[in-house]
Image 1 (tube, helix red, strand yellow):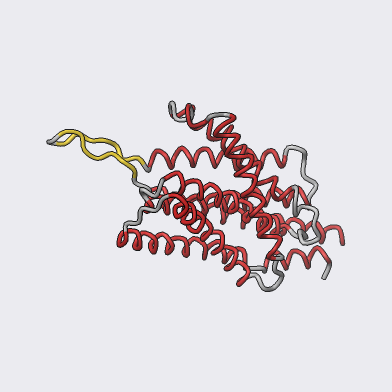
Image 2 (cartoon, rainbow, N blue to C red; image 1 turned 45 degrees about the horizontal axis):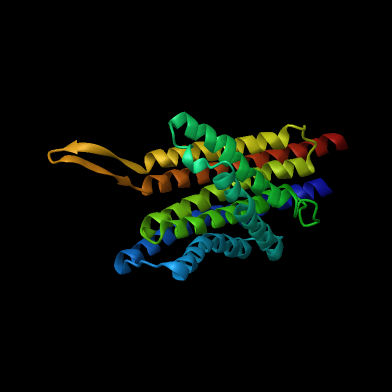
Length: 300
């Protein structure tokens, strides 16, 4: 078997990443149910240091679930745990040190991005989407990219997913602390949705990174991948905002309803994550098949 055939079969038959994607979704839904049950029974109101500690724990759980389950499944040719974790930590640090300060202080997005639907979509795509996706990309591109451990296309998806989860973890810590502990039931749904979608987007970026690493792609290839991920980020952010707000309605006693309902965003998040996972799986399989077909043609 040639080296290219060997690489194809290792990448195609290595089930760990795909099983992890499906298992992560199931486990995170269970996580939502468990936290919702505990909160409904205890009604905690943490503040100060306790709130920060709770935010770290709640936000880190999705990443730990993915990391532990992935390594349990990916035994045939596992990626070094320290490398995967290192990419996730680097992405989280980039989010804390560069991404969120730039968006919140540099562009002051919170003061204008919700002015109307068009402004929100454009701002979410062109600013929030591009800044966040570029940093998720950078955590892979400027760390593991030239390592000998990065030796097949699926590795790009693995490290991209880790980077997306790292970025999501920092966003989730800030979400818990920013909530001031007042609505932990809604916050845990937000945590899970963010982890699902950003890990899937990281996997999509990882596919583009891997193709740039192993294939002779044109100069526009990686910018196109970033644009696609940023576009999905922006549109999803807008849709999530629209479907989680209960509209006010007129009743016999006046205006009723209104408020925040996080559960529609959970449904949409699961659908988006599953869709992106299936898309990346198809793209990787197709790329590997084309590579193998090209190798066979060359041998003839």
